[in-house]
Amino acid sequence: MPDRLPPLTALRAFDAAVRHMSFAKAAEELNVTPAALSFQIKSLEEQLGQPVFRRLNRAVKLTDAGRTLAPGTADGFAALQTAWQATRRLQDNNTTLTVTAGPALTAKWLAPRLYDFAREHPEIDLRFSATLRVVNLERDDVDVAIRFGYGPDEGLYSVPVRKEWLTPVMTPELAAQFPTPESLTDAPLIHDDSIGFLKPPADWPTWFRAVGIDFTPTHGAHFSNADHAVDAALAGIGVALGRRAMILKDMIEGRLVAPFKIAIETAGHFRFLCLPGAEMRPQIAAFRDWFVTEIEKTAHVSDAFKIVPVEDIPPA
Image: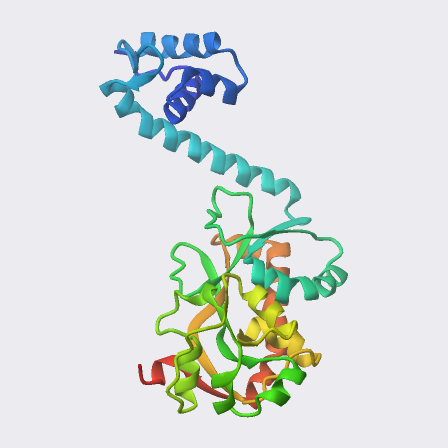
């Protein structure tokens, strides 16, 4: 049996048909007629010397040969796609930068500061994707990911930045109504459920234990996004246990106050991620340096707080 590969068009037709398990849908994806796609698969089978599909009345099923061929074909096209995208990026090596970050960080931290970056680097065409979707930096059209959590970030260039601390924040008007930590047990509390994955928890019961109060809230508004929780506090709805990155701008500009000066710190932190070696690209290096510098500009705010690591707080 000859080892010569079949035409790429035949392998592409087979790969699409495997993914859809439908000749009609595969033909639609490849923008060819079903008859043309069927011809490509038939030519592949003739060269292979055995069928790769069993044709049923309204469906197709893989034969043993098809099941053997499918994984390698999928991996091959995925590798080609990765190589193609990497090569295309060389054309805009010094002009385009695509960054993905969570919606909350984008809204509360990045967006208010991007004017400064754009002014300092007018040569960079910055594009943002505000999502928590897991991205593949080798496959997806993304240069940099900023993510919050613990990692690990195996196989990636990773720059960790400061750990996050959390403290109660509210409007100045609401602060006058709840002047002590004890009074917060009667306050409308806002919950940020987006950090429920943190272990140990960085939540209201943990903060109350940090200040010596045994209290577990049973009521309050819950938000799945950190920025929505902060927005609720800005609207005067209640008191939010705000994360440093999400509340600093509003605190510095006086829209929110943090009157109790006790914060709990989680080991979770933001990381600047890109492919190994990509950190040397001028636009990625520029954005990394700017990102780290901007975070350090507000590091002094932490000096006003007693920061207690959640690992040091006794469990309930």
